Image (cartoon, rainbow, N blue to C red; front, side):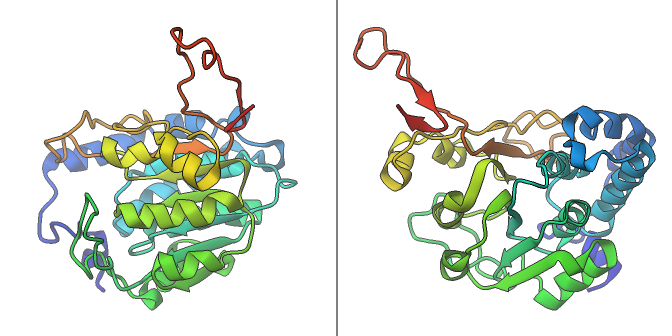
Length: 305
């Protein structure tokens, strides 16, 4: 895979980025000191990982350039937001970092930078053969084999741009591999496209996520996809708890991008942010003034009391 292939959008591999795209990149390069100040501010990081400002600035530029060298569907500021959350979890709170759906390994490389700092292991789950066959009932079916990158290619990219020594790569479809995950998890990143894949990830990984651990997803633009995180039926059926909600559902968390919603996606309106939830949060509605027996139901750590 050539350098140009690595940088290209897989959905439009021959498209030439417009001038505005380069202008936005230049703007981000210039204001990196400000971005780093806000996203990696010492008040947001655990005392175990109080990096110097200059080290954080180097980290910011490293993350930025990695997203220009290897195509990712998310903006570098989304990667810095995830790194911030990983660095906010102290060393005493054990747990690995898990990524499901890595494509070419651009996000993997950046997550590995945070794992090297914190001493956590990064588990990377992917088929390395592209998307599987979509379930017949899936609302978001794709083409089998699209978004494929071989495992050796991904390892090479992470070796070059990140820290491959902290990574464990697990090849196979989620329904086959995730049930065998045993380690406690501190942080999860999902880029899995299908409803069936999201279901596999939640059912198998959520029970392993530590309390107050983070789960991020880049599939935030479809509100009916995000609905899983608010589905009282799903969370009661499988976990006997209330749904956790999803911060950034529909538009992503505010990171200075310009996405304002469908239908137009392009350089002026490209969804590059991210959304997340946290173990112990609640997205449960409990105000029913006409039902006194249900009104003000006490919710703590995702469970009814």
